[in-house]
Length: 318
Image 1: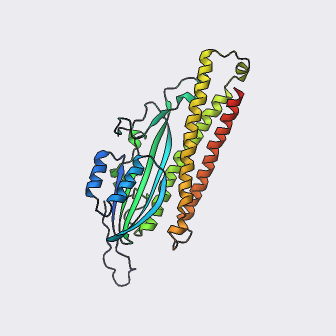
Image 2: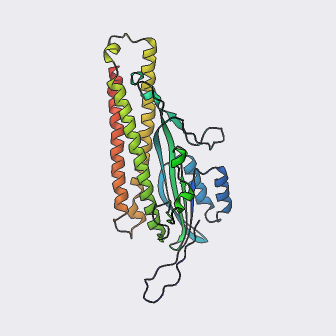
């Protein structure tokens, strides 16, 4: 957490507005962290924080703004960016946080079925891991505001996972929301929200593009090695037929899931209409950078849909 005030300006120095901001950054927040947050949140933030936590737990895409007047004039800006991280690893990633029914909060899907048997075996296996980054900015006015950032890291190798201490190494304090210099803070809550969205979208984009690339590579390799002559002559064994049908079912299921998730996230940005929420902000950086990333995400969506077209052609052929 951080409180930030600028001391009064001295003659000849540029004026800097005072700002009181508190930042809370948590990786893989569990039930204990959530309970502590709710217990210490101000009464004016409880409802919006509860809704924010629900969307984070539910693995739900959303980008929005909410305003209310209750004693203080509070407003909040928030985004939830769920994605699927493709991991090729010796050991299955596991989210140790559990739901009430005992299942992990984030699901991990074994994707080894995508590889044809002819491709041989490997000590590493493919996994598709649910993950999400969520940010909430709650403001009283432009000088008093609170930020929350939740980041899933469970799917990353232990040595690569970011923790709070990593942002305070070598005397350089890095802001985990924006990856900027924490000693040169962004004081405007709106500017800070956009800077956070821009940085976290880059993580979101890279994960989606890597997943689309690996999915495409596995499907193309499987189809390239498929013997259509055996399928046409109906000489496939019962085991081979069952394996082929299982591949079709599992591939379609995972592909449709990816397409729907990415489509929803893109639609959330399209519906957000930043010009309506930030009418005084010119369409410059980081808005242009954010818009460019969503252009790249639409291209990534096209890649996934092209995989589905390839899948449909294969399904008809068998």
